Length: 360
Image (cartoon, rainbow, N blue to C red; front, top):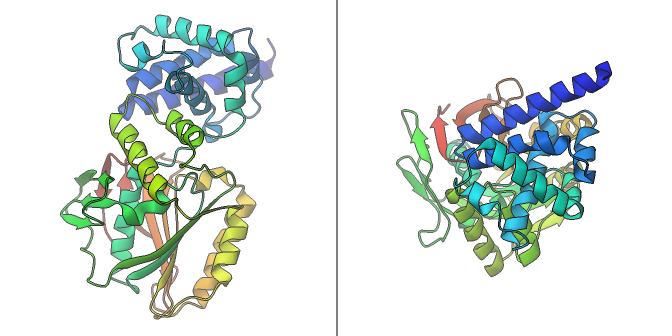
């Protein structure tokens, strides 16, 4: 075996172990067993196994294990094969048995599973909207409390509909009381986000994605559900609520690169007394560095022209690449002394199960 092959196996093993441990620590031990089974799939004489073995530059950024768990979960959700139901329910917990079953599924459905490796998982999670909303409530005390929002990497627009969700964030409640989407994370920290001022309002929300998913289309909705870990029932319930809301009124999404979307949105006229705010969650890492830089420069340039009656804000829930902690950070510009400063407001569970509020 060559040195390059040894390094590739070591990198694959590290990535697989991290992803499986991450699933275990976040309440999905059954999904973790499916992830660990991919080590045996890599050794199999299948097109899927060969592609995994030949994967170039495999890192956690590629989210390759989650691409495969999505495809395998889809077999169950679509009715193609129900054998994984016993794994997801915990009836089969022996890793050797899980390995054998997953390898059998890959051999049988190789042609169906191979295309799931073509792109990263679509994992927009409504639970993450808790952090975004908390950031908006914090901003509403500092800038105009009427918001014109635009979201990057919106996927199916699950969080593009955050104005339709009911939130309980510690002691603070906001959103339509009758909403079918109830988001109530475990609240940690010594305080809650500020209560919404009387004139708090989300005037509009628009999102972009290079490959948006239409939640009103049953096949597309099923694909999105496939990426949700099946042993996380709260997440499945939230996806179902999002599908219901999208069926009533689809989110406002455009198919567009994030860089071009930001430039066009910033160039549009802004109403006086309204804060224009960009937000995104767990997607920044997937963009090329050049796109990240272009968006940052565009926001900072627009921020230089922001005023107290036409403020600009940036709300981001993203993963720290060094610690893997999910952090809510906010920047805003309104012609004041704190223009452009970055404030860390909270840490959060990757799927919104808890929020640790720091405030700022």
